[in-house]
Length: 204
Ligand SMILES: C[S@@+](CC[C@H](N)C(=O)[O-])C[C@H]1O[C@@H](n2cnc3c(N)ncnc32)[C@H](O)[C@@H]1O
Image 1 (cartoon, protein in one colour):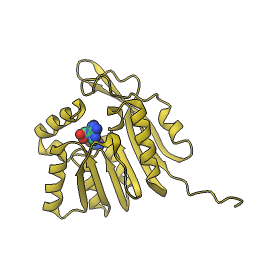
Image 2: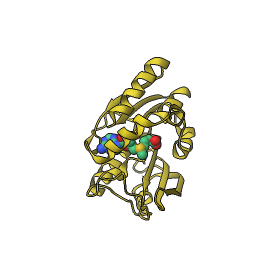
Image 3: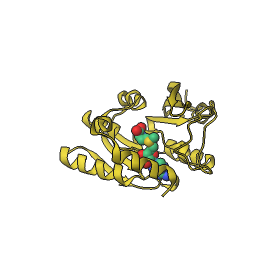
Image 4: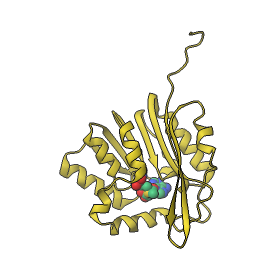
């Protein structure tokens, strides 16, 4: 298990139920864009997945944390929610099928950069035309590094996400800074982008 997954397993185990159910600000931003079939890639405890299911989405949640995945499964069974959860290492995961929305909040920075970019391309590939990708990562300037494997993490360049979504319609692109322990900081980039429909050759 990687250091980051151990870190989150511990955190999820000790999280109070109130904190566990609350959407974080990036999940709040994502929720209005979610409809239809949703893939939550790096779902954590599934707060966004359950909020999306409540508004009618069918959600596939993936995460490496057994604590998170077990929590999602029992909550889905208890509530009869349309959320399925699978435990998987997402560094090398082949997504099956396509989705109306693919969300990945706070995951890709836990991979080395070539892996993060490869996985981002895989996420983009599996969004249906007209559907949304919602991606949030830590960027350069972040000084809180406790949760990272020292040799395997990626702080994106500030322009990286927009470069990688250059062919997409950008609905939102934001940078957010948060204070972190020991006078460090976390600096995030969030992009909400709509996949274009394929151009027809010779079309007007
Ligand atoms: C910052 S949390 C974000 C969770 C959720 N998306 C949210 O916004 O609250 C990062 C998540 O990535 C997961 N994670 C880290 N490395 C992973 C890996 N290699 N494969 C799958 N999940 C991983 C952790 O278990 C954790 O749930």
